[in-house]
Image 1: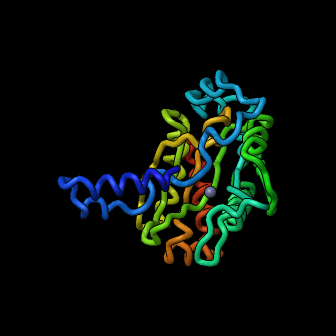
Image 2: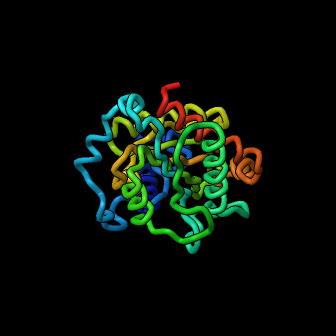
Image 3: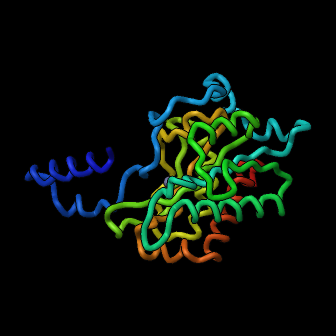
Length: 247
Ligand SMILES: [Zn+2]
C-alpha cells in the first residue's frame, strides 16, 4: 500500500510543474516503515482499551513507590519462522531482531531488577495477535518491539522509533530508547507515530524501533557485526531503564 502511494505521489509530483523534482529527490526512504498495520488482524481477546488509556498516562514512578517496583518488560523480536521480515545484503530481518533482542534481555537481566518476557526466543513463527496477547496476559509494564527497516532505494538509511498515535507514555518510551540508540547512527529519522498492530493492541505503553535499513549497504554491514548488535541491545536496555527509573 505504501509503495503504491509512493508511486502515485511520484507520478503526481512529476506531473505538476510547480513542484521541484529536486525537493522530491531529497526524500530518502519511507515516511512510515513497512510493518504490519492495525488492520492486519483482529485484536486479541485480552485487549482492553480502557486499561490502555489508564496505563498510557500513569507515571512509572507511581509504581516505583509500591511493592511492585520492578518492571515487567516484554521484548518482541520482529518476524520469525516462516516470516523473514525484510531481506537485503544477505541478511534477514528476523535473525537480526532476534539476536538484538536476546542480547538486550541478557543485558537487562544482568544489570537491572527486571522481569523479561520474549514473544519469541528462537526462530519460530508467532502471530501478531499472540505477541500482543502474551504481553497483555503477563501484565507487562511496557512493550518493546525490535525491527529493521527496508526500502526500494538503497540510499535510505538510519534510525527511527515509533509509538502509537497520541500515546503519552508511548512517546516517552520511544523517545528514551531513541535517545540511547541515536549514538549508533548518523542518519536520525526521528520519533514517529504509526498504527502498527503491536502498538495499537498492547494494553501497556509500547514502542517499536527500526534500527537501520537492511537494504542500505552501510547499515547492513553494521547490523551484520555482532559487536554492533550488542551495542544496540545495550542502548535499547539503557533506554528502557531511563523510561522506568528516570535516569
Ligand atoms: Zn519488521
